[in-house]
Image 1 (cartoon, each protein chain N blue to C red):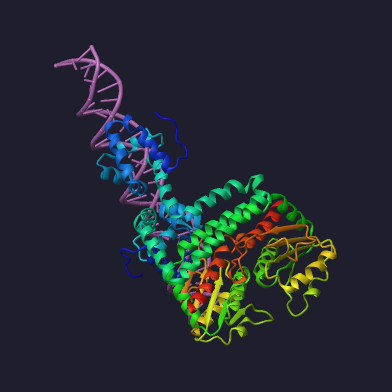
Image 2 (image 1 turned 90 degrees about the horizontal axis):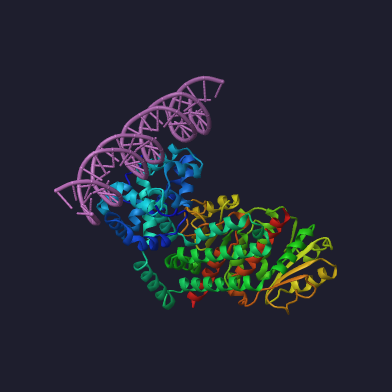
Length: 277
Length: 277
DNA sequence: GTGCGATTAGAATATTCATTCCATTTGTTA
DNA sequence: TAACAAATGGAATGAATATTCTAATCGCAC
């Protein structure tokens, strides 16, 4: 058995579990994963409840506690409960500490301040997104995708992550996707098979990637139904699109987090899947 | 007896107790004062414990719960426990409730509702991000990146958009980046040149992409300084990493918006650039 | 002071709970 | 394939728990 674990903080327990995880047996590993993911359930539940939710017999829970050096489940549970107590108490002390550290970071330490700035910016971009996107546009977009045989995705340069993500989700949902990435040469050839039976989702923000601006009109001219996601009605992927999602106030390329377009394409994909049933 | 109290929030219970306080008998008043002053004790204690600490017999505690319309102490205790879980996970609770109420309704299946659900979820994930990431970790991470000659990026499968985005931003900032994409065959060969002078940023969420789990230990074993972004301390890219960013409550692959990790890598990159001046 | 209803305390009870034990299964080595 | 050790699941057990019940007490009007 392991050394005795008298008093232990929740964070210490977490890392202790992470460390020993590999040395544990299969069932015990399963429990380890569950308790790290559902600490609140462990804190407030009974052995039987935790066992049921994690899909193991109750005795395994107790064995898990023993393996970590506790005398039993109850003893381990105390550590998880301390986390709850700590979470509700710190209205005064921790908030002050947080304020102090944030203030400090704004003045001196850069990275933390940068993160909070990006988080704040992302928050407001999400608010703007939900305000600017209308239900009718979304309905039209999902209708186009639903009818499409193949879905072509065009998003190069800084927009490439969005296109990749959309491709990933759509494929997970069983859709046929052609990702126009220009790999190995001509992006034109990749899109050559697109017809009016298919659909195109184009994503582009300033500065608009040249290949995007070049390819988009060709596909539109061939009658491929098109959904555009961009930051301005003057962008090269607006004219000819059936639906245009305009995401305003996109920061310059190096500073954009792509949070809003990522959310939007996700909603399109899942909305498509739910509407199909 | 009083009206039945089905589901009740902690705040509602508080004011209910305050209102009836005068109408209660002596002992029950005494208990009312205790539970308002020591809600945590009530949430986590047994009847016997609460009775002892408040200086009354156990049966009085049960009578108190009855007087408030609960079926018993256990029922009342649930309300006090809800306060604890609300304190530690404000976003999680709201998300679950929202999901459950909207999932099955016809409204929830319409694209617009789907979008607002993702927006809400993204919002809460950003809050969780800024709470879970500490300044020290960010400082260490940027220090590692600052010293690196080449920055290797490992993020496959669903995490690929994050890796791509980080590669894009870092390159814009003039950093030397090697994106491990496994294109054209062996991902091992792509990473073969990595040394202790370089750095690795690994990104992986459940289900952990097999190649990631395979390649990561190799690079760590070769002494490449590593920053991991993952969703659990038990993920295969934790052991051996210099810095681990744990992003909790990541939804299942098809439903994740990658909002939090996108923000995080952005902050890392820009923070690195600012600190370099 | 007396009688009556409300309130209380503590013992009794029935339930729930954590824990232990053992037969069975699983995985490993020879 | 056989034999062994480790691990597992489920039933058995005894402790702890919430709740109920009843006799005693208290407050109060008459």
